[in-house]
Image (cartoon, rainbow, N blue to C red):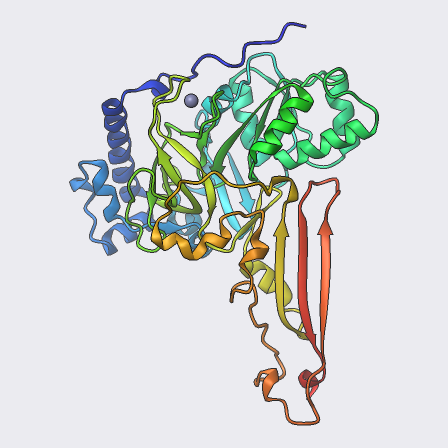
Length: 456
Ligand SMILES: [Zn+2]
């Protein structure tokens, strides 16, 4: 069977706008968005008024910095503040197409507009073409990923197998019988599929037909990419986005960073002040998608990155994210899903004997070095040990990773126990993950139990 050319071509004319056209386009989109959001979103109106930001005075992209950023974590609280997801939406829930739920919990609305999540140009850049048979291994249950990635494949006239996660043997059987040419999922799960297929005696190149893979939700190391591309004889490219705003960036064939999507305006900002930084400086990725239904203006993603404006051989003129070089906080992404420390804290608080605890997440398959610029911004240095979500264990001890669980029956801490009643502590260590059907992550929870003092 002849292979398709997956290396050439551009999906949208907006991908090749020159710098001044792009600036004008973004200014126009932002001006319309700000006016609309101020008029129809109660939350935006409150926020703009509080910051004394006048939408009529928005002229250039520089003016955007006068709007305070919203941290992704704030959405958990803001969405609970009333109807229309706390006034963040500009229409009623019943007018939407779908409403998803992400960890947090955070609700992710989806409207009925075409290419709502904006991934189509990214999938084209990754090499997906009409007639591909594609297998989506992301979750279809409540979380948006599965259905979110069906949208671009439908736009590109590809057939979709909504496989979802797990059932590895069935997944491999489907890939073989239906001659699947495209994979959509996390890189670690593709590695797991490869290992299981090889263990069952299959040749990945002769018995399977994979030609392209789109990965997201996890760090993709160059080592892992090269290994998988060689094993399957396929192209593997990654995208970057969130369940709140959809596509933010995507790799092209030349894999030298993530081209910024034309459906959003992206800033790199100081994580503490929200002030935009210069090109090349590492800061928090702050995104404003041109989305009038759910106008999250200046959403701080919590991810760290930097902008690269060097020309790309693919011909796309959009600036690129040089890479996602870490997180500004202690949130971890496990199998594509965010896990917040406060969620772990809520669970651990149920065990009143637990004195203190630590959770450690590692992904050995992706633990090779990150690509990062040579000189990070000074404010980022304090988080330099957190630059890889794959190796958060090196961050301990930090107060966030060792929070003291309050003892509900005793107000004094253990150190103040009277002589003769000194507490007995026991260290525990639980591990999960490894060679499981769901990927290569290792999750380790360590905690200290605290016995007699609580019972007095
Ligand atoms: Zn390119």
